[in-house]
Image 1 (cartoon, rainbow over the protein chains, first blue to last red):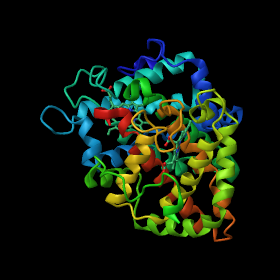
Image 2: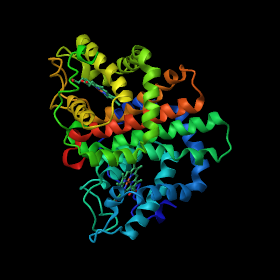
Image 3: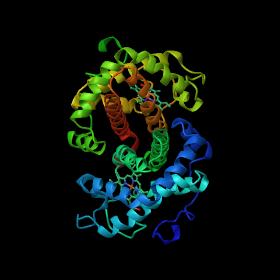
Image 4: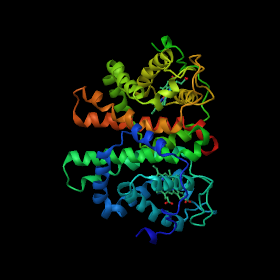
Length: 192
Length: 192
Ligand code: HEM
Ligand code: HEM
């Protein structure tokens, strides 16, 4: 499946400048441990056939806020539908990757690629579009809230016991916060 | 009480470069509404006589990780106890402010001051210490997790109904994420 998503270059991304030791520290900061890996795998099973529904919720949220839609607008100031659609398929794959991939050097490499794609270094290139030059960091950080809060009902649909839903949800929160911290690297440069 | 905390200059901070409109957008991103203001006020009542216990948990967490303690070390590389102690009293006040203050222009001004105090622009000055020149942004972002997860038991101690605890906790999460987004401004400069 991975190879059929335009612009999704998981295996081709250049090595991340973030070291394994730095990643380890961030894992400790968010208390990410083996139980969370198990819980994320479970979340992956639960979410795999709900990915489009999750994306509907998130795209509705983005679409209902001018300031969030802005980085998806074209040269004419209107939402760029192809751009939105292409990013959406990669976003769906990201949900799967977050749950299923080992957080190793390859994963770290693609995290850096995602980071760069939100900044002037790499935004718009993957989809050969004309749009704004970067996604403001403040919006990336604040989207932690909706991206973590709105996943809960989808986890609950599994019908799994409340403690399992809770464990999956906490693991998801930890992972999203960890990833946003990784994505802030090219924004903060030497202060990262 | 405010005036007795060394270095706590809530009413003196220069106006923030962040506009009211930008703040409003960030509030929307984290879904922060009037119900959250009510819930935070309630959280303030619940937390006000537990502040030292909350700080014990957070300081234990920081103290048990070399990389988190590092920005609190002195020129000799050892933890700077006075620095830790002085910041701790302001951190306690921050818990109160997060719950009790209106999120207005004055609050925004002190948010910018807190942000700058984590960066080379202002770190160490307030307490006249020699220490590292900045707090790495990646640690600030990832600390969202423990700062939001560990507050729950303290909210539960209130004995209030589960929905009220939940509402206070969600409001706390939203506010911490919002504030970290504000604090990222001097790190990201024009990409903020
Ligand atoms: C926690 C918050 C966020 C998450 C989890 C997230 C996730 C992602 C993912 C997975 C991709 C695709 C990466 C790839 O190419 O494989 C992406 C791309 C993109 N995101 Fe985000 N994002 C976040 C915040 C935002 C915000 C707030 C905006 C806009 C205001 C935004 C706008 C974009 C755009 C425009 C792209 C395409 C970049 C390009 O040209 O390649 N993102 N995001
Ligand atoms: C969500 C995460 C964080 C929160 C809520 C937070 C909160 C605060 C607050 C309220 C203050 C006092 C502001 C004032 O002077 O009134 C402060 C200062 C400080 N914080 Fe943080 N902080 C966070 C992350 C971190 C991290 C990860 C570190 C270290 C690794 C850190 C190190 C410091 C230091 C060294 C100061 C003193 C700065 C100075 O010299 O004035 N903070 N923080």
